[in-house]
Amino acid sequence: MGVKRLEDLGERAAIRKISAILTKGKNRGIGDDCAAIEWGDEYLLVTTDMMFRKTHIPAQMSPYQMGWFLVAMNLSDIAAKGGVPLGVVCSFGLPRKTTELFLKQLSKGVDACAVGFGTTIVGGDTKETDDITLCGTAFGSVKKTEFMSRTGACPGDVIAVTGSLGKAGAGYYALKRKSGEKKLAKGLLEPLPRLKEGQLLAQSQSVSSSMDLSDGLSSSLYQLQVLNAVGFEIRKSALPLASGLMMLSDKNHDIDPYAIALHFGGDYELLVTIRQMSFEKTKKALQKHGADLTAIGTVTQKKDIILVDDKNIKNLENKGYEHFKKHTF
Image (cartoon, rainbow, N blue to C red; front, side, top):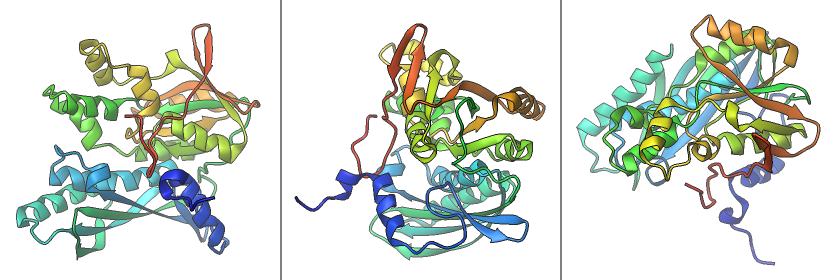
C-alpha cells in the first residue's frame, strides 16, 4: 500500500490525523469553529484562518477586499460560537516587489472589516514570501452558558440558516461571465460575518449545535452528521436563495441556483439546530433586530442526509469545498 497524500485524505481527514497526535487539554479544541479556553465564567475564543493567492484570491479581488475577507472569515468563526470579538492579529506574507499602495489598501481592508464589526486589529507580523499568503487570528469571548458547540443536535430539532444562500456563488459566476454586476461580486469578495445573529442565537439558549457555512451547506451538514451521529432531511423549497443568485440564474439558464446554494460555499452564514418548541420564539427574537432565520429541515434519527423536492426524495451529495481535494465548482 502506497503512502497516502493530502489529496487522498482531504482537509478534514488530515485534521483528524493531526488531532489524534496532539495532546488533549481540558479546553475545547480541534473539531469546532473556535478553540474555547476556560476563562472564569466565560470562554476565550481563538480561531485562525489563512488565505493563499491560488486558493482564495480571485484575480478581480482588490487588496482592500483581500484584507476585508481575511478578517471576515475569522470573525465568522467567532460568530458561530455566539462570541463577541475582542481583537484580531494579521500576518502578511508578501513578495518583495509588492507595492506600497498594495500594502496600504490591504491594511485599510483589514481595518475596515474589524472596525465595522466592533473590534480592531491589535497586532500581527510581516514576512517576505514567494506569493501572497495572509493569515488572521481572531479572539473573542462568550459566556459558558451561551457557547454554541458543533455537537448537541438531536432528532426532532429544526435545522435553520441565517440570511440567504448563494451570494458567493452568484458573485463567482458574475465575475466569471463578466456580467458587470459589481453588487453581486461583493457577495463573494466582501462577505459579512454574522456576529449579531450569532450573539442573538447564543442569548436565546435554544441552539443545540452551530457552525458557519464557509464550506457550503452540503459539506457542513456532513460535518455535523459525523459529530452528532444524526441525519438531516432538507426541504429544497425552503432554502432561502439570494436574490442576486435568482437574478443571475434567470439570465443564465445553465446556472442551477439550488446546486449553488447547496454546494458552493463562501456565504459565511450560520447553520444551526434548534429545539422545535423554541424555534418560532428564536426566529422572532432575531427578526426584532433585523436578522433572518429560516427553517430548512429537520434533524432525523436515521443517519442519512436527504433532500426533499416536492414528492422526490434523494440523498444529498457532499459537494462542498474541501482543501487538497478536487472541487465541484
